[in-house]
Image (cartoon, rainbow, N blue to C red; front, side, top):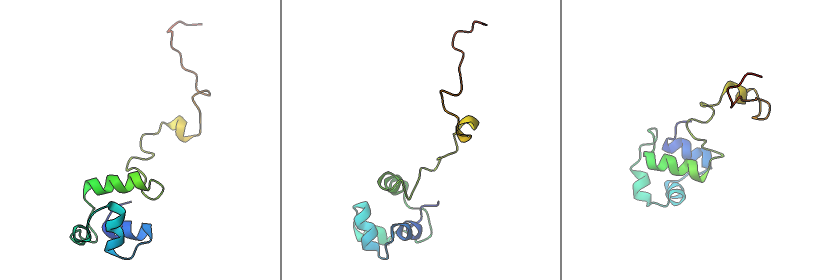
Length: 87
């Protein structure tokens, strides 16, 4: 999800800049300066993800998963040889 002002406002169920300003803990004037359909400042993107990971998952969520993890395998189900000895 691109974290634009309009996308974040909509996901949070907000309709006004003042609501978004309160969410981020900044003044309404700051939010009013953000273009509607451009990415939010990077710090605000991180803040949104930290405050509401249910709505704004990390950018790399799911990208670094191993095929075994994606298939639902657990660490217990995937033995690892640590000794180098052949049995």
